[in-house]
View 1: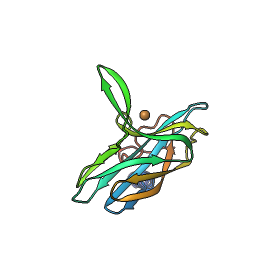
View 2: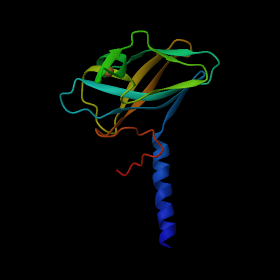
View 3: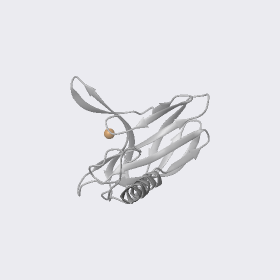
View 4: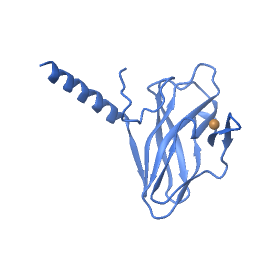
Amino acid sequence: MFKRILVAALLTLAGSGLALAHEYKLGNLDIVHPWTRATPAGAKTGGGYLIVINKAATADRLVSAASDVAGKVELHQMAVKDGVMTMQPLPDGVAIPANGKVEFKPGGYHVMFIDLKAPFKKGNKVKVHLTFEKAGATDVDFEVAGVGETAPADPDHMHMN
Ligand SMILES: [Cu+2]
């Protein structure tokens, strides 16, 4: 009896996790679970994350991102240099290898929202226009996760709230 209830609860959790992993198709690209984090009041910047899977035999490139929610949107890379975390703008964009994928995640590649016009609120969506060199351009919604959340796309990550 108890076991059955537990299984049902786990299935419910797994189901809600899957529902959060939204996905877009653009030509040969899969754009998986774009997300960002709630920002504290007064914060001027925010980072956006997603996974781009390229099913084509030729490489593509995320050239730019744009959004009405920020004065400026850039593509950045976070890297540790001489023991210090630094953030570099990538004016040429990010290459998406043939039959490969690139993960934009905290501590690595990210979409940088600069001069936020309003704070990002958990549960909201941020519309972003992504332009790829070969696949073309599309609008996707970045889901706003809670402040402390790290990777809602991670299937091991259970959403209890
Ligand atoms: Cu940045």
